[in-house]
Length: 397
Image (cartoon, rainbow, N blue to C red; front, side, top):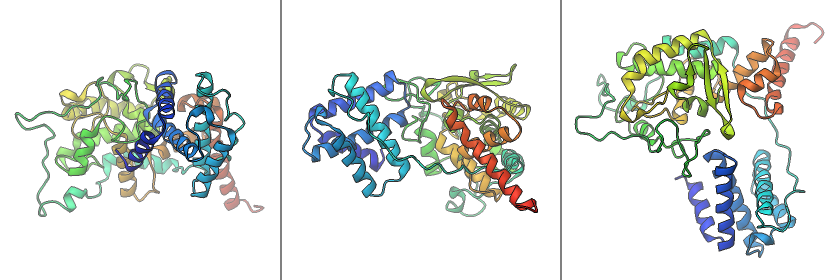
């Protein structure tokens, strides 16, 4: 548990009983009725706990005593302590969601947050790789040596190799993923989690713990020259092909099962935010990478607890999104590319689709955006790139 989570829990426990009960019921509503991810539930609950703690300090003892003055005072305090515009916008959204739910549930006599306004979040244009840079990054596992790993630079004497096997020793207990359903991670309520934020939220701490200790093979950019890194290299190639070739979110890629790949139609079945399912096509290079991984890579990493997960970590559990981010960043650094994340590859895929003439609605469907406004930011990226080229090349610029 992170320090922020511990602080939220302590504040929650200090709230009056009626407020604690309202927070718990709201969290259950988000998870079970709205089918929000564990990450979203945690963020909204933390905001509501902060709001109610502020209300208590202003003399309130029950949710029914909330009013617009309290809400505005809370947001003003958040701004005073340095919260960014995006954070203020999210917290205002959390307050409105809680107020609307509480009114429907009879906890509040009126929807007090309905007139609450929030600052418009400033949306920076996403970092986008050029097409040649993206291609080099996707192909990096096949041709580029990886950067030294922490276990190699700080470990035994030079020339000593880390253990190549990821299998447990005879008689050793295999650590399986903690979720009840081995095919997909679950949140504590039993619902599927599609937007894990890291090893604390996705039920796959086995691989994360390995990376921290360096006990066995570590996840990171693979070295094609090392035979023991071959399964990891094949896995990395699939990961990069899927992230750029389909534009899926990193949590969606890590949540894929083997059965989600339709080899005949070359599409993957993706479970996105809010439990929304969509079919996303992939290309021939990704098909080759998937075939190689399923034939030669995945069997070498699989353990009894691997379940149906498509992408596996170094110890055989479902690949952790935090690890996937580290893998992408490692390859980008080894190639001297701009700092990029899996979401940067998603941005790049969307921008390159639009630059190639794809319809905005089609890109929205591919990315799984519920609102077209979320997709339109990529048109701004394309216009900015066009404007930069114009300024550089046109004599009348």
